[in-house]
Length: 277
Ligand SMILES: NC(=O)c1ccc[n+]([C@@H]2O[C@H](COP(=O)([O-])OP(=O)(O)OC[C@H]3O[C@@H](n4cnc5c(N)ncnc54)[C@H](OP(=O)(O)O)[C@@H]3O)[C@@H](O)[C@H]2O)c1
Image 1 (spheres, rainbow, N blue to C red):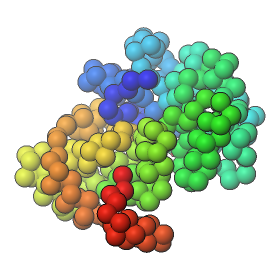
Image 2 (tube, rainbow, N blue to C red):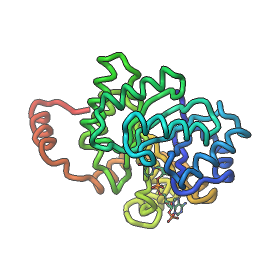
Image 3 (cartoon, rainbow, N blue to C red):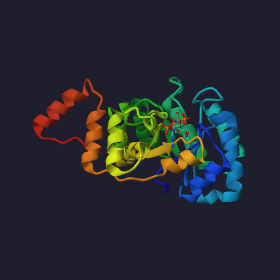
C-alpha cells in the first residue's frame, strides 16, 4: 500500500476545508478513529470521500475506545460503525487503538485476520501497545499464517522519544511502518519549547514546525499531523530537508537515557565492534 509521506490526523479537528487542502497538496493518507470528535471525524471524512473519490485515499481508523476494549465483539461492533460513518465497504488500515491489557493477543490477531478474510479491512495495525505485545502479535501472525501486522501508531517527537528503546527496533526487525502521532508534542514544538529547533529554523530560513516535522521524517516515520484548521495545515506541509549534522544536533539535544539493559548492550556491542541497526 502506497501512502503520502505524511498523514492527516483528524483527532483535534476535521473539516471539508482541511481535507480539501490536504488532498490539494497531494496528501492521500488520512487517520481517524471511531472515538475522534465523538464520531464526527469519521462522519465528515465519509461525506467528503463520497465526493473526493474513495479510491484515491488510504483510510486508517481505530477501534477499542467506544465498545470497551480489544475483544472480538468490540472489534466487530466498532468496525461496522466506522464503515457506516465512512460510507465505505473496507478500511485500508485498521488499528486497535489501545491495549486493554486483558484480551489475549491471539484473539486480537485472529479476529483482525477474520476481518481481512471477510474483505472488510485490508491491513492491520496496533497503536499504543507495549512493544512486547506487538512483537508477540507479529510473531503469532507469522507462525499461524494469519495476515501480518503492517503498522504501529505511536507517540513520537523531539520531546517524546521513548519508543526508541523497544518499538523502533521491533518495527525495523518486523518491517512495520510507523506512524508518529503528536509529532509537534501536541503543539509544544510550535510554541518555542525547544530553542535549538528555533535556531536551526532561522539558519535554514524556515519555521520551527517544518524543522520538528522534518526530524521525524528523517527517521523514516510517517508524521500524523494534527492541524486545527487549513492555515495550520499549510504551515505543517512546509517541507525542509535537514542535513545529517542538523539531525545529529537535534538527536543529541533531546536524547533520553535508554537505561538497563540497553546501555549494557551498547557497551558490549561497541566492545565487539558491532554497530546496532
Ligand atoms: N493513536 C493515538 O492514540 C493518537 C493519539 C493522539 C493523536 N493521534 C493522531 O495524531 C494526530 C496528531 O496528533 P496531535 O494533534 O497531538 O499532533 P501535534 O502536531 O503534535 O499537535 C497539534 C497541535 O499543534 C499545534 N499546531 C499545529 N500546527 C500549528 C501551527 N501551524 N501553528 C501553531 N500551532 C500549531 C496546534 O495546537 P493548538 O490546538 O493549541 O492550536 C495543534 O492542535 C491526531 O489528529 C490523531 O489523528 C493518535
